[in-house]
Image (cartoon, rainbow, N blue to C red):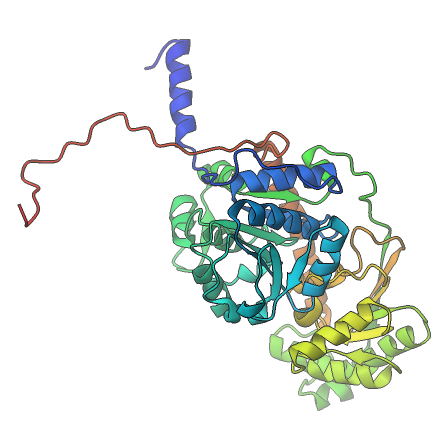
Length: 470
């Protein structure tokens, strides 16, 4: 049994050395940053520069764009190599506009020939055109694109930037209940591979090879490890700063339920108009209520005079909405990139009043605080898609109350209930993640930390272990 304060102190020091942390490979003393950054933004950027490879999980409207641009500017100056920001469709122009506010030139690139020294930005769908470009750093905007470990996009990103020295990931929704997505971020940053993370902190649940559970005794160490390479913030006060103007206006949710008749249900393949439980039955219920749901949305948008976003999930919903609302502009997945960018820019700049599109097309990265009226005419089970679409308008910088209309049929009740459950879980889990990171991130006093290996014993090679050459 160990006795004595000195021995116990040595033991605690020994245990502290065992804690797994991500190595800091960044700048020991970052240069001065733009005075236009808010204090919390300034300190997060300095922390990320010291880390060298880091993730910023900051809620919508907290200035991830400014932080990414300033981080990229410094990295480009220090490495004397170009830095590339990779963003969702139509967000490149937004980065260019935000760069002007910071006094940073952000160059929009369509292929490798456009790359120049300094800060560059392109879209994910053009990333394959930059295969052989030497970069000093890379920023993934809306890095939740890494969430699926089986996707070709995720694997291409990991392979393309494995040798890039400075890396930054920025997103509002890292899905704190999805540990696999955190693992994909860690792998992109070169901290641990997904397999290493699972082997270190997780175990299998039952006989399912894909069901992983965080080990109870490893929970604190897991979040300590995440805090060594990521910072999570919903409000500046999460990190001990004043919230100031970072307060959101009221959000008003309006639920519209369309009654599905037995006749319509039978036309769509259902025996009775009941709440659908399976995906097939839910699709049938949506088909049965399409005309009535579109009519409600069209009535709301047509007589408003205000900018509106009509979010849908199916092509037939999108087509019907575009036909039903005079002057509405539809952005479809089949449109080419230039057409999508032009139409989204028209809505951003007020040339279009009503936009019809899907969260999968325009649900990430856009700043549409000029719009305070939204309708969801079709819902999927993806909470991330719903949350991101909602936060295009309900974000910091919005000055008016936001009205959100959720239009479903009685047969789709299970979809809406599932989204509400996921929202409650996400709020709880996000709060827990912030609490863990608040203890360990130490953003204000972040220093350049190195996980140094200190051998205490000489390695002795057995005499019988010799090479073939010997």
